[in-house]
Length: 282
Image (cartoon, rainbow, N blue to C red; front, side, top):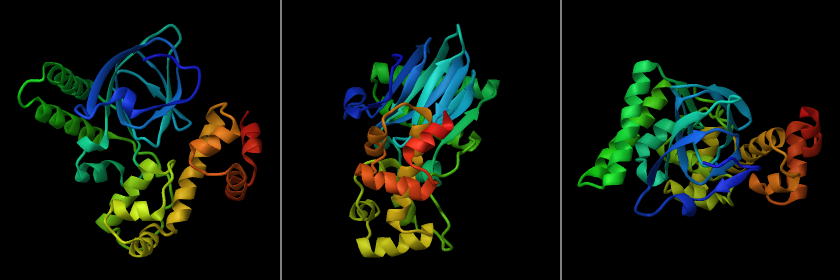
């Protein structure tokens, strides 16, 4: 892992292959890793050292046993304490390895999991990471199944221990959430920065656009378009506060379309322009 001077997006094509939807690294970080995001999912687990993790603009402390899970909608940075080194496992994977029931468990309320494991939990997690590394390297018969099991145990364990962050969008509906809408919400939370027409969201859960629109509004309390715009604006605000990216680049990184539309929507939502918002935080 290299220290970065500025935000970047890490792409599947550079880190993943069709035959290997899971990869495991063990990093020794002795300098700041700049703000970045990625197309894949990532679970980080600290095995030694201490430092600071900034996730979507919110800082938290890292030490042995600290764990976190990132989706393709998240951005973050890492920094070891002065003079120190952070040692951590970095498990990256695509959604191909996660069955629908596990996706729902992890992400239906906006995702975002972090936890601090105790000594016994830390050692147990280290054994799972070690097994993933061994089976991935040796490629023995049945190895894919063992890797799948370890990944699922790690994710379920983190979900049970975690401090989930606040969901990224409004969820004020008064009706029970149908499984199809829940599945669409997961898709939206992971793809809101991309062009995302209602038809695509409806197709992700197997509903017609008109019926999906009706079900979504009842479950979420807002329209599909309002929900997606809120995710984009919150993401843009976090980038404004935590990076020096130009406003134009933040506009496009958040999926907000044209700059004039982005600036109008931002001012309406937060009461000030993007540039004024950034100046207020300096």
